[in-house]
Image 1 (cartoon, rainbow, N blue to C red):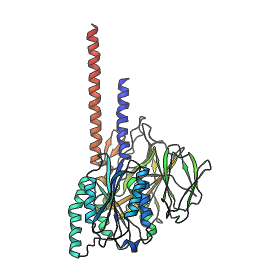
Image 2: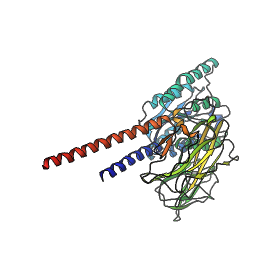
Image 3: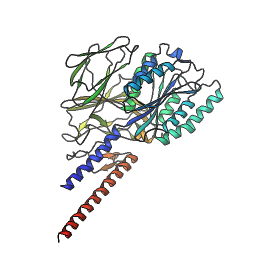
Image 4: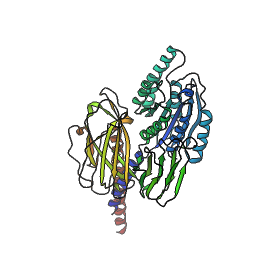
Length: 477
């Protein structure tokens, strides 16, 4: 009996470790361009709603630090936990400080100072920087601009790579240096987005949030979405509703009204929601609902992949916190499209492994660039979708370790389904007792350490039990 409990303990310890990786806390440094050019590129201060919304999308166990910058950097806040009261105070400080005044733009200084801020990050939190700018390196002198850009790429970026911190960039005008922002993201495993018009800023921040958090969505169909019993909280992103208030109706008929984005927060948060079908009374067509729940859609596809590694096999599954592990699914689908062309949607054919195993498919040959992927799944009592980004780079591009890491299915107490045949391209992966495969060497090293630690613990406990039994036997004589 003790041996059975030890085996269960081993599986639970490893399941907890995988769950901790999937639900990591964030330490985010937000860098906001405060140069005078913002008066032209965003005369209505729409970026403030985007900043409010971004804060609202982060969880209460995430920490945020905020800096504004022009030719100099001005700290607004050190790292703070984003509980409701702190978030509102921080929003007020950001609004007060976001009056554009700086004559020049120095991108080197805020990114270097963000590194100093990240030195105080929590050991169990994922470090990252979100850079929001409408311009380029511009200190009024071409030689100074070139020198600072060179120092940024040659000296600051290697420190980000060494520390495992990602940079996410958001370009907010045609004058932005998209090439530099893309270089920053590519070299750290992050992503960059652009907002061609002021009204696109909030949507771009929403895309950044999904890149960072990879939340599950509750699919919205004709303004309706299903909330199941596993949902602890959901956030409704108000889309392009503009000056119109958002009206949300619960399954029991109660209504909640969120004021327009110009006067409030473009995110409506509902905690401990009632289970059943909810309705957006005035659905805008692009409303998004993200959920925090015990159910999670997952795939073993990394954020970055080399062009020479395509076509690429992949797995998709749904899992639940705790020892339940993989969930049974009624249906799962996967679509992809170039990030800038949502109309060019393509489907990836999927097959199921066994009667309750994961779904498998193969990403086709894709050209260099960034692609959006949408997973959609249904179970006996839930519906989920997930939007992720895939960056295809050349074979010669060094892929940052943080961008190569992929999630793995949590071990289940039940017997796993047989794995599909290993293709030659998959042969480089490491198979862990048939439960799952790991391609990233760092993740494999961590898992191997956990296994041997638990094995040694089991051996020590076994020796102690045997010694105690032998001692009782001897004393009985």
